[in-house]
Amino acid sequence: MYEAAFRNIDKTLRKDAGCGTELDYIEQTSWILFLKYLDDYEAEKETAALLNGTTYKRIINGEFAWSEWAAPLRADGAFDINKALTGNDLRDFVNNELFPYLSNFKHSADNPRTIQYKIGEIFSEIRNKLQSGYALREVVNKVNGLHFLSNDDKHELSSLYEDKIKNMGNAGRNGGEYYTPRPLIKSIVKVIDPKVGERVYDGAVGSAGFLCEAYDYMRNSKELSAAEYETLQRDTFIGKEKKSLAYVIGIMNMILHGIEAPNIIHTNSLAENIADIQQKDRVEVILANPPFGGEEYAEVQHNFPIKTSETAYLFLQHFIKMLKVGGRCGVVIKNTFLSNTDNASVALRKQLLEECNLLAVLDLPSGAFTGAGVKTVVLFFEKGESTEKVWFYQLNLGRSLGKTNSLNERDLADFVDLAKKQALSENSWLVDVGDINKATYDLTVNNPNRKEEKDERTPLEIIAEIEELDRQAAEALQAIKELL
Image (cartoon, rainbow, N blue to C red; front, side, top):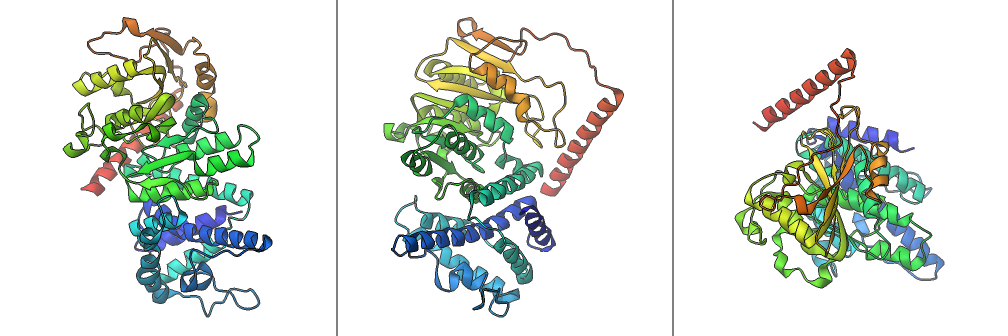
């Protein structure tokens, strides 16, 4: 029902001079969508209060209410075209009045957990990029046709929004850091198996894919009582995000999945000294795909006992510290972490094996992350006991992955099934930590069951793969040119 509306919104955004990338499209859609959600949310609260014989005071009212500037109605309920702002009047109102008004909620809110604070944080961090007030009016009108009043509405909108996030990731360059393939996230969540009552944390939350999937998994794990549902809504999910756009997308994504006031904090998780993390801060479950390849300043590195500029290695230390004893973690990391010989890599592998039980290592094929040419693994570990044996699983698909042939849940079904019992197979094996070189703690993936494979592809399949690699190389070259 809403798919055409989303396509038309993107079409309008592409025509505006202020929006040039997929990142711009989702950012601008997000803030307008968020305000429409708030209007529906508050209308629902008003109706519920009326039925209970009480009153509800709106968060956003007066000239800043959606029904005043975005979708004013005549007495007969029809759209009031004469009262609706458009052109320069609309653009100037949004830039000079609406955004300053909304950003002020950050200072007047009681605490960061409230939806008022989220409003203030979002509109302090982003800006309206639409230069044409007429284009802005077109987008607002299209968003006004979307509704958040039923679970079916929210489900369809969340699916479409996920597609936008995926498109942003596929656009390459820094867009990919916001998107982790959903089949992979779902499989990680299944293996970690979070339970209602456990707190779930992602310190590099991005678009909140892990938290959204964990919420869906836990909500559908059994028939929930009212108290358990309230626990899921308010006391289960915690996210932290450094970047402004990802923060906005993460909040919107969680809202669309059904969490009314997402507990996502706009901060750099690594800026906190891990020595200051207390027992009350620790959680039972961590799910994350922290950025890799990035670097942090020396001041940030001082917050960690193992000094390194590699962002992913700092996050791994942070996650180990954030887990309660018995807590479980599923984290994506570059496969070079398993074999690098620098001091930080060796020390971190040693810490992981000695302070945690490294339950499993999932070795992913190239192309699992569309648009990113890095090989990755997923580490599954439990804090509290040292590791005696590590179960490895190498995902061998027999095909190349790319934009038109991406990872799916069927690809990972065998891994999920075998991981529960750490069964041995052609693609899985156990490594005794007692046999590992204690000078290097090398955990390189080396499948002892792997047979020499013949290339059974047809000439056409080989040509198709070459063409796909050429296309990816051309995109990367274009990205470099744009950066220069």
